[in-house]
Amino acid sequence: MEEREEHQDAIARTLSEVGPRLRRIRTRRGVTLTALAEATGISKSTLSRLESGQRRPSLELLLPIAQAHQVPLDELVGAPEVGDPRVRLTPRTVHGNTTVLPLTRQPGPQQAYKMILPPDRNTPQPCTHEGYEWLYVLSGRLRLVLADHDLVLGSGEAAEFDTRVPHWFGSTGDGAVEVLSLFGRQGERMHVRARPRSAEPSPSP
Image (cartoon, rainbow, N blue to C red; front, side, top):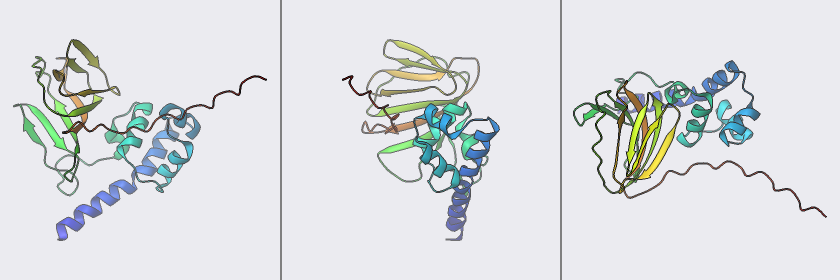
């Protein structure tokens, strides 16, 4: 019971520090709330509430901000080092050399993971299975083979695809890759906040 309370306290502290950290990063870069709102599609009022701690941070808000600032998601969250059991789950190794860290703490249709793909994971072996996947490159260069497409994604780029299509992703061979993955086992897709549509001009009289 005590360990669980410490775990919850650690999460609460981490979340409470996100707002001030977002403000420091933005002001250090000389970016106004208005400019950030235009770059992310998130309203100025939502960004302001997020920085003041009045709005709870979520992936749908933090990912566009991380991309706009061109920084890893970890820098916005200020997550502690992997291995602190009060905050992070234990990473596991799959396929012999890929490190996977589950980020979702409860069962559900959609799960989030952070993956570290080693440089030698560079031989395409396409597979298919039920589900839908969304990938965001935190650092490094990701090679994505999707049906007849062979793509390279850099830091800050994202891709989404139906996993029933033959696919494979790994390193380009020139270094490790850190990736954020959102996966829906039954084909669930991530809901992204859309950029507000500009008002259409009134017809001329």
